[in-house]
Structures are given as C-alpha cells and as structure tokens.
Image (cartoon, rainbow, N blue to C red; front, side, top):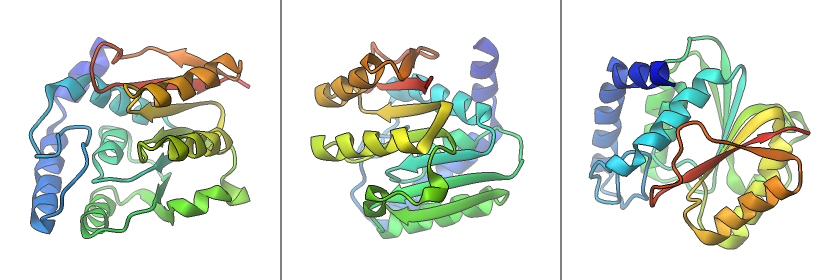
Length: 213
C-alpha cells in the first residue's frame, strides 16, 4: 500500500481540482456538509486522510462501473477518478438534492473527466432501481443522509446495485446505527470486511465491505 500512498501524495492534479471545487463552493455561498477533505467551514481536516486513500485506491481498482448514493460537492467522486487510467467508465450518482453547488461541481467534474459517462438520478428513484443497474457496479459508495431510515434503505439498495466481488464503501460509520447496519451485512454471510487503509481509530470513519455471494 506504500506505492498507492506515494502515488496519491504526488498526484499533481489533486490540488488543482481541490482549489477549483473550493472556489465553486464558496461562490454559491451555501452551507455545505462535511466532505472528504473539509469540515463545514471549509477547513482541511487531517483526520480524513486515510479515507481519501481508500477512495483513491478503490477507484483505481474499479473496472467499468461506479455508483455513489448521495453526492455532496464532488470530492469523493474526484478521489475515485483521480489517477486512474482514462478508460471509458460509467459513473451513476443518486442525489435527492439539486442545489447550485451540486450542479456546478458536477459540471466541473464532467469537464475534467470527459472520458467518464456520468448519469445523475434522483435519489428517491433508488426505491425502485432500474433493472439495467442491478448487480453491475464494482463500487457503490454510500455517502447519503445520516438518518437511520435513509441509511437502512440506501444499504438495502446498495446490496442490489453492487455485483458479486464488488465493494460497498459506507461513510460515517462512527455513527452507531450506521455501523450496526454494516455489521448486519457481515453477519449475513454475504459480505466480508476489508481493512486497507484502516480508519477505525478516527472519529470520522468509514468501512469497506466486499460482496462474496
């Protein structure tokens, strides 16, 4: 994993994208949620570094299809696309918010990652997943609302979206009921825990699970 970490540290595009996205966010004058780099005040948070590495590494491992449930300001999308080969890729985003910051950040990412086929769908539509999307994703990143009802629904649908041997990354597992739901996935026997760049000791953690059947 040292090679991945060095590659991430030395990636010259990362800071360019970060600066540009921050300018977009500031220009909208919106209150934002925490991202994979900043707190709500747009201050860099060093406790998020291992989470950044996980998304960077997993994005490089993905072959064809990535899905994100809950788009905020594009930082997690950027991390999963950063440094990977510029081969055609499908990236589906479910979002129940269509604020100016989301639209502007997604437009920017489409310009910078022109080889990616982005599809933005209303998150409410994930209740009935289009059949064409079932079981096709290498990665499903659950970065959604932190309410208990929404995380139960989003994880249920992530299970339908991800293919066997694909992974689900669940954000905010420092929250007890989110972590408990991930535990139930592992106890089902359908998933195993992956510990790559371990984030458990951090207050803002996420977990990575792999679908094995």
